[in-house]
Length: 424
Image (cartoon, rainbow, N blue to C red; front, side, top):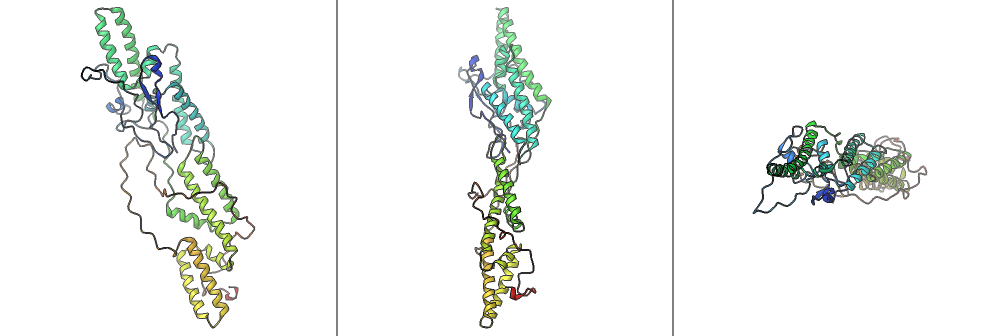
C-alpha cells in the first residue's frame, strides 16, 4: 500500500501573493506507486536540532550570514522527513509539511484523502489501519484549511507559510529592526513588535505540536511477494481442486487484482500475488483440457494428481522396463506401457522437470541497507520476477463440460501396485 498523493510537483508558494516571493515544495516524501518512503536529502532545521517530542522553538536571534555582502537567496520550504529525528508517523511532521502546500494543493490533498478513505474501507484489499491513518491526516488537513481562513490572519498568515529556517531569519530580522527603531521611532518599533510577536507565536505553535509527540496510525507491513516455492505450491494446490472451485477462485482473484491496482488506495504486491495465482489456475484448466483429449486420458489424469515429482520419475523408469520386457512377447502391454511413459514425459515437461537442466542457484543478494526510524515500510521480500502478460478476461478457458475434473485416486501409478493391467 502506498501513500500516493497529488501535488507532488513544485508549487508556487501561496505566500507569493503576499510578497514573500519564494517557492514551496509540496510534500513528496510519502511512498509512491513503486512502493516505498524516501527521506528527503535536506533536513528540517527544527528536527536536526531537537529530538522528536522534545523540540524547542527556534532561537529568536542570529540569522543566515551574508557572503561577500550579498543577501542569501530565499530558501524553498523543506518538505520531507529528517533522517535523524524526523519520523514518517509524526503528526507534527505532517502538519509542518501541510503548511508548505498552496491552497489549491491543500484542497486536492483533502479530496484525495477522502477518496482514499472510501477506497481503503471496502473491497478485497480493504485495510482498516490505512483508513484510520488517512482519517487522522484528513483531520490535520482540515485544521490547516481552517487556520488559513481566519479573518485576522495578517502577519500570522505570512509566517505560517514560511519554513523553519526562513521563519527564524524573519524573527531575527524583526528583532534587529525593532531594536533599531526603539530609540528613534517608538511607534514604528511598536508596529514591528506586533509582527515579531506573530512570528514568535508561530514558532511556539510548531514547537508545541512537536512536543505533543502525537503519532499517526502506522502503516501495515508491506505485502510480501510470493516466493518461487510458494508459486509452485499454488500449482500443486490447483491440481487437487475441482474445476468448479477453480473457476470460482478465478473470479475472486480477478476482483482482488482489480481492487489492488485501481483507485486511490492500491496494493501493488497484493495485485502481483493475485495475478500469479490466476496464471497457475489458468494453466491448470488448460492442462486438464489437454489431458482429457489425449490417447491415454485416464492414466494421464491420475499422474497429474500426483504431487511428488520423484514418484513420477520412478514410475516412468518402471513402465519403461515393462515396455522393454513385453516387446515381442505381449505387443498390447508393450504399447500400453509406452503410452504411459509418454504421458509421464508430458506431465514432467508440463511441470518443468527433467526437460531442462536444473537452474543454478541465484547469487546471494547484497545485504539490505540499514534502515532508520524514518523508514515507512519494511524491505519487501519475495520474488519480484518478470510478469508474463495476463489476458484481461478468462473467456478463452475451456468450458467445464465434466471432463475438466480429475478422477478420484483409485490406485497407484506403478505397474507393481496391484492395479488391473487390463484397465490400462
